[in-house]
Image 1 (cartoon, one colour):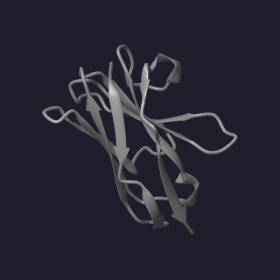
Image 2 (cartoon, rainbow, N blue to C red):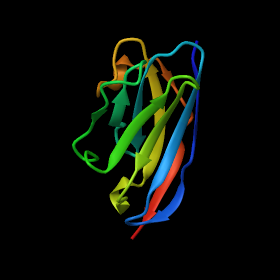
Image 3 (tube, rainbow, N blue to C red):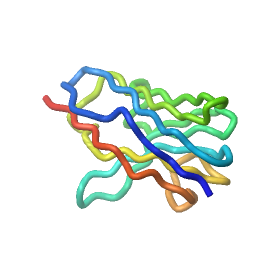
Image 4 (tube, rainbow, N blue to C red):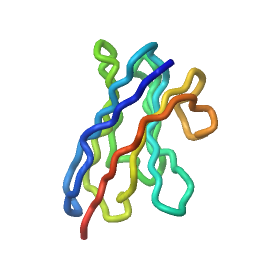
Length: 120
């Protein structure tokens, strides 16, 4: 069993930065960040392996977001720079035994999610 807790969300202006954290208890799995707006499908944002290697990004955030991992603390970070109003969503981290890329169906455990709001 893996328990995931996100933190670091909030309200910022366009162009600002935020850093989200995901603290994972239990075994170290691959982790992905996803986001979802009301009435929309959950969208993959970024993923990283259980050892903190091979970061992978959605095209919409490539060059602006950076995923990293502190393996000693089993904490996964999502540094979000140059934020845009269209980045406004609920962001969730998720853990997978087999994947760190886009297919959300391969993720076994999910955090509660945290709101990120970017004003124009």
